[in-house]
Length: 270
Image 1 (tube, helix red, strand yellow):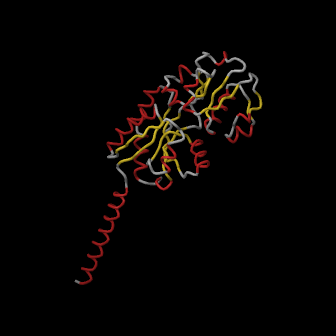
Image 2: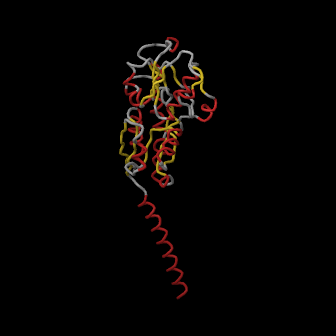
Image 3: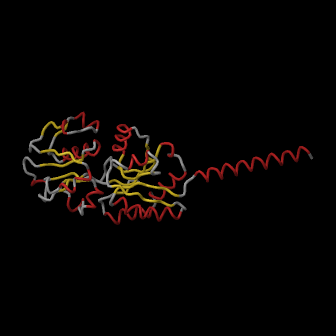
């Protein structure tokens, strides 16, 4: 009797420990998240993500930013649980430059970059000495210069192209003597009256009423290495809520919305 009783006691203790561990894990998971997104299409997409996540019991509070320099700082400081606005080269640069420890947990969209103009309708009309605006952050600035090179307007040092580190100092040939003007990404749409053409990220272009397919005089190919992503602090990358957030974004409902709403100006990357 004593041995049997002891076995039952040990079995009950083991069961209690298992249930406690499960309850602890559940308690540690979050059911409410703050997610930083960029102004424009990021807001639109996350309205759908929120609805999908709610079916899984996950409530998402969207925090909108109109400056690319702020969402990673907010995430690193703990003001956000995650953000969804950037591609890997931008994240790598921010981690290195600002000492963040932020990692990707899932892909979202690819947003092809375009050059826009209020002065010309076709890149063939670009005059000599034209002023060309591009982003002053290293990753997007490099991306814009590569797009200029792909259009045959400049030539860059091969090493800079290989390493994705191109700056105006790496321009080898510039036959049209273009004036390269580096500005904050958010300022570029407002500077179109002063510039001949400007590289404008998709979210800012949309907010300014510009369409990649209709208005861009140069645009990236649909497939590019600049897929956007959901990012979290490294300590949170394996948390259940992070997986649930990615699953909500990468759902059939969100994919269908992106394809229907943006008609190729944004492309699901999952």
